[in-house]
Image (tube, rainbow, N blue to C red; front, top):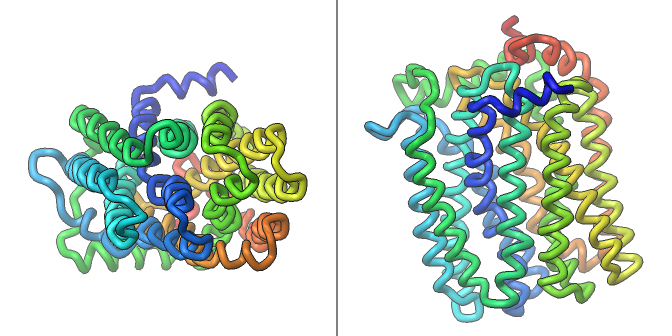
Length: 419
């Protein structure tokens, strides 16, 4: 165990934390925190559900990933340059968003939130390519855990802590503080180690076609894409409605924020770091199955909370189980995605895989408010748990391929059929 833990002390692995934090910070600012702001402003559940479609850029990264693979920012490097540009523009958009009121102009809020989502997704494309290229094969699981740890801590800051700040001050201050944090992140970006030199694609056509030809020429390529699509769809759908759900039970923003800050942080630390260790010890295939089932159990906890009503104990338990299981599942899924990437096309292929993993949940999320209104909170969260079943069924057909790839020291080569 000591030998396994020492990998977390490596510089490349530790450098994933600030990357993860910068990646995770904008997400909830166009997700649940924005939902809470809009709910406070008096918008209906149906309107909030429709506005969740603003997060679609996260699921459509593949559309502009080839541009980020093909072109580089002079002097700053192929990966660092795009990360820096994205962070600076994100800060500007968040500052502008902090000066707009949803009561006065919902459309302006929607446009700015869409820009934040687009820039955040662009930052993610380059960060994913950066860590895929920088981390060595034996560092992949630990690097994923540290990245996700930073990502989840950032989500708690822009989620739970943001609600506390909003209740005692305003949502405008929340978005302004987030902009300042990203400005600080851009300073760290300038000090990042650049990835090993890789010759970029010579043309845009090459940047688009070659990665796709490489991936879809592999055995079980479509089945793996389907598995990735279904793996977290229930969890994504549930998350869209969490804040309106908590507020409907008459929890205050401070109560929700404190639970997210204390229970959420602790569960995130355990989930992400334990996920990195267990993925190595259990094997990727078994970890994916166990952690996926854990996500479903977390959603059942929310069904129980809906049946019981306002209960601080059950709220803490539900949030704790949710953060723990989500941290575990994301760590395993991310390790799978990295193992599937050919490092010659890491930005495009990772964007393809991440887009596939998010698009179904995002699309269904647009109808989440309508579904919750129609069936009620208990059945809504139970249905999100049931959505895990197809992924489990598909896992049984794919586990030999996943296990075969997991046995190799450079797993993406075996999984891609190029061993």
